[in-house]
Length: 497
Image (cartoon, rainbow, N blue to C red; front, side, top):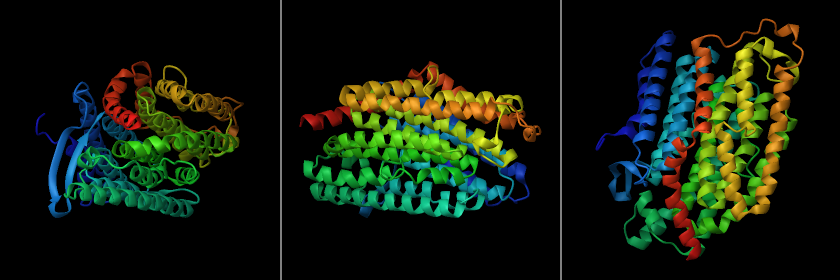
C-alpha cells in the first residue's frame, strides 16, 4: 500500500462523478443514478478497506499524501488519517451510499443536478476529515456547507427559503469565527519558528502560552460548535433538517453535524491547555443540548422536527464525552458520532419514504401503519430502539462509554444526563405507538411498503451497521482508540504542566 493514494481516491471519487455528470444528458436518468452509485460504492469499498488496513498498534496519522501548493505561504495539499478520522470517513461513506438510493426513490425532478450537489457536498466532508493543512481544512469545510443552499432551496419542502437562509447565515458566521482562530494559529506559529506554514502537524507540535491558548480556543470552540450545534447556537439546525429532502437530511444530521465536533477535537489537539480550561464549560452547555433538544423533540408533532431536535440532544452526549478529556469518555463520544450518524440517517430515510407517499409528516395524521407498511414499521422500531440506547445496537455502547467517562470527571453532570435517555425513550416510543400501532385509518389503505431492492437496501444496510457495531464494537473502538489515546495523553500532559 506504500504510495497508493487511497485517501485521494476516496475523496476524488465523488468529485470525478460530478465532472462526469456535467456531460450526461438530463434525460438519461438511469445513467445518472448509475454514476452516483458507482462513485459512492467505490468510496465505501475503499473506506472499509482503510478501516481494516489502518495500523491500530502504530496509531497516529497514516497514509500521508503531501503536495506543495503555495510554498511561499506554507500551503500544501496534505492528507492523512488517524483512528478518529478513519471512523468518520467510514461514516460518511455509509451515509452517502445509502443516501444515493434514498434519492433514487424520492427525487423526481432535476435528478442530475441533485446528485451533482450531493456528491460535491460529500467530497467536502471527506476533505475535512482527511486534511492536515488548515487552508484545505477550511476550504473543504466551506465546500461541505455551500451545496446545502441549493439542495434545500431547490428540492426542499415547506419553509425551504427560510431554512436555507437560516442555515447559511449560521454556518457562515461559525466559519468566520473559526477562521479567526485558524489565522491566529498560522501567524503565532510562524512568529515562533520563523517559518509560516498551515501544516497542522507542525502547528500542533509547538507549545503556546496558556493565556494565548485560552483566548484562541474560544473562537475555535464556538466557530465549530455552531455546526454541532453547541448551545447557545443549538436551535437553528432542526429547521434545516425539516426542510431538506431525505438524503440531505441524512447527510446534515448524520455527517455535517459531526464536522463541528471533529473540528473541536482537532482544536483540543493543537491547544490542549485552552481545551482544559474550557471543557468544564462545554460539559455544562452539553446538558442544555441534551434537555432542550429532548424536551422540544417531545413537543414536536412533525416527525422530521422531532428527529432534528433529537439530533441536537444526542450531540449533547457527544459534547459531554469530549468534555471528559479521558480515554473512555472521548472514545465514547467518537463512537457516538458514528452511531448517531447511522441511526439518524435511518430515521430520515424512513420518514422520507412515508412522506413521499402521504405528503405529511405529522404524527397525528397517522395511525396503525404497521399493518400497511410492516417492513418500514420494523425498521422504524429498530431506529427508535437505537435512539433510546437499547443494548445490542451501536448507540448503547457509545452512550455507556460516555456516561462512564463523564462519571469520572463530572459525576453530577453524568447523573443528570442519564435522565435524558428517559426523555428520548418517551418521545420515540410515543411516536412509534401513535404512527404504527394504533387502529388503522382507511385513508392510508393505499400506502405502499418498501418492497423493491432499491427501496429496502438503505434501510437494511443501515440497520446491519447498527447491529454489527452494537454486538462487535471493537471493530471500530480499537481503531478510534488509537487516535484518542495520543490526544488524551497530550491533554493530560498539559493539565499537569
